[in-house]
Length: 386
Image (cartoon, rainbow, N blue to C red; front, side, top):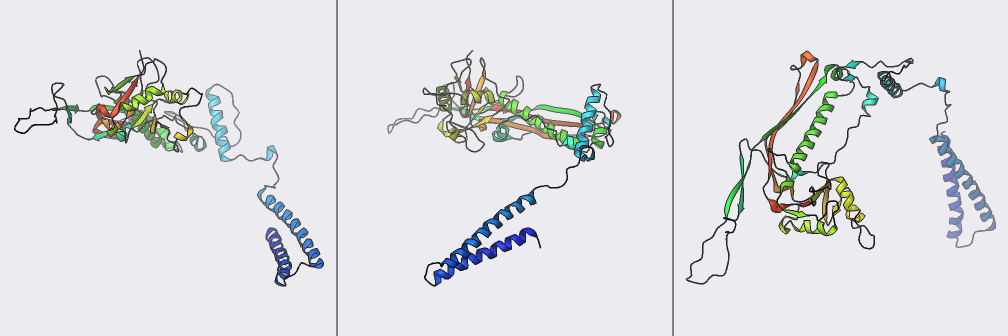
C-alpha cells in the first residue's frame, strides 16, 4: 500500500475515535470521565506524531532524492548543446580558437548568416515600440480616385446661417455659410527585403514568416509616424491641426496648460478624446507636483494597463516629438478628426523567381494612402515655445 495513503487512513481512524469519545459524553449529557480523558490525550499525541510524519512524507515526495551525477557523468540536453554550439560559432567569427566537443553542432552558413538552432531561435527578441491606435480610430475611407471630404464653414470669413428673433411682416435677411472640401488622394509607399534561400530552407525557424511579421511591424510604425507627423509634399498628420496652445515654455509643461489644452476640444468631441505623447513627455508629466510635494498624477488614475490623465486615456508613441523648442509635444482629442484614404490596401508578397540568380527570396510590400485633418475642432496640440 502507498505509504502516504496508509498514514492518512490511520490518521482518519484516530480522528473518528476521538470524536466518538466526546460524542458519547455529549449524548449521555455528562462530563468526560478520567479514563476517557486519558484515552483522548493518548489519541491526540498519536495524531500529532502522524501529522508530522505525513508532512515529511509529502516533502520527500516533492524533493528529487536521486543521485546527482558528477560533472563528468552529466549529459547535456539538446538545448545546452545548441546554446554552446552557437556561442562557439560567435567566438570563431571573432577569431577565437575554439575546440569542439563531442556532439558539437556545426552551424551551416546561408546567404544571410548562420542557420540559427531552435533553442536560440526561441530567444530571438525584437525591439518593442510604443504605438498609439491612430490608424484604427481615424476616419478611414478606401476610394481609388480623389476623395473629397465636405467641410462646412463660414462664407467670406463671416457669413453663416443666422438664427435671431424676427418681426411679423418683416423680411428675414438672407445669409449662409458654405461647403468646401478637403481632397485625399494617394501616395505610394513600399519596402523590399531579401532572405537567403539557405537560411529560409535550412533553419528550424520559419524565417520567412518572421520577416513578414517584422515588415508588418515596420509598416505599422511608418503609418503611425506619418499619421501623426505627416511629411512635406506628401500627407498631413494629426499634429497639423490649427487648434493649438502655446506651452509658455521651451522645456516644461504645467498642469494648467494641460487643463487649458483639454478645453480646446469642444464638449461634443470629448467622449472619445485621449492624450497622445512620447514616453519621455509622459514621464515629465507624471513627475509634476503640487505645492505640498504631492504628485498630480496619482496611481489611482491608472485603470488596468491604461494610464489616465484628467479623466482621459493616455496613449504613448515613440513617433511623437519630445519636449523641445517649437515641438508639438502633446496631442489631445478624437482621432476621427483625421481622415485617411487607403487607396491601395497593404499587400505583402513573396517573390520566389525574381531573385533566383541570387539564391534568395524577396519579400515586398506596397500600399497607397493619404491623410489630412478634416475636423480641426476634434484635435488640439500643445506647442512648446521657441
